[in-house]
Structures are given as C-alpha cells and as structure tokens.
Amino acid sequence: MRDSKRLTSIFRSLSDTRQQALLEYAEFLADKEGAETAAAPPSEPLPIPRPEQENVVKAIQRLMQTYPMLERKQIFHEASAQMTRHLVHGLAAVEAIDELERIFARQYQQHLDALQKDLQSL
Image 1: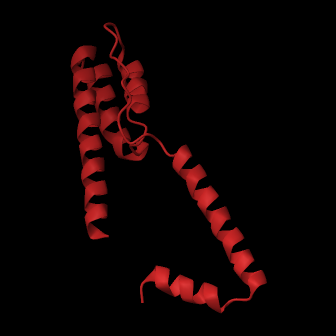
Image 2: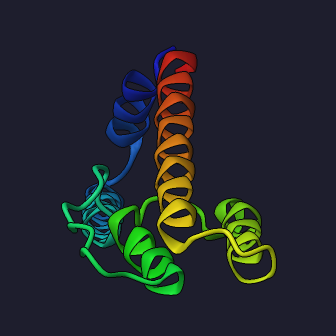
C-alpha cells in the first residue's frame, strides 16, 4: 500500500481528537521542513566576481562564499595543497587561484552529479 493511502487509512481510523492532533503534528512538520529549506544554502553558485588583485587566502574565502553548498571538508585538502604550492614552492598567486577555481568548479560538478544520482535512485 502506498504511504499516502496508508496514512489516509490510519487517519480515518482515529478519533476526532486524535485526527486533530495528527493534523497539528503534520502542520508542525511542514513548517519545520519549510524552515529547513529556507535555511539551506543556495543550490547555484553565487555570482561573486574575482577581484583583479587577490591573494590566495582571500580567493579561498571568496570561493567558499561562492559555493556555500559544498562541504568544506571535501575541499580543504585540495585547497591547502594549493596554498602550500603557493607559499612553499613559490607558485604564483594567480596560478594558485586559477587552480582553486578549477577545484571548486569540479567539486560543484561532483555535487550536482551526486544530487542527480540521488534523484534517480528515488
């Protein structure tokens, strides 16, 4: 039996008082769901332009703001590797930032692919 039919069947078997309580609980859950959706990060990258003069730390901060939907833990390793290449190995800031932009764009694409896969499995 589909969930909606099952829920309807259960609802109809309840007393008026319990039906009202179930409706109130369902409204509570719906409100909570709406609040969680409103608090969720945007699904698209934010249009934050790259300044002409930017250091690597500021670039990471900008990209984290541009892609708030990405998990920071997933990006941290690659971003810190670029910071090391810049600070320790002398990679120019512009080149490190270019690579950071590619990393974030790739992570975003992987994020979209995972969402698509999740939708297809439903």
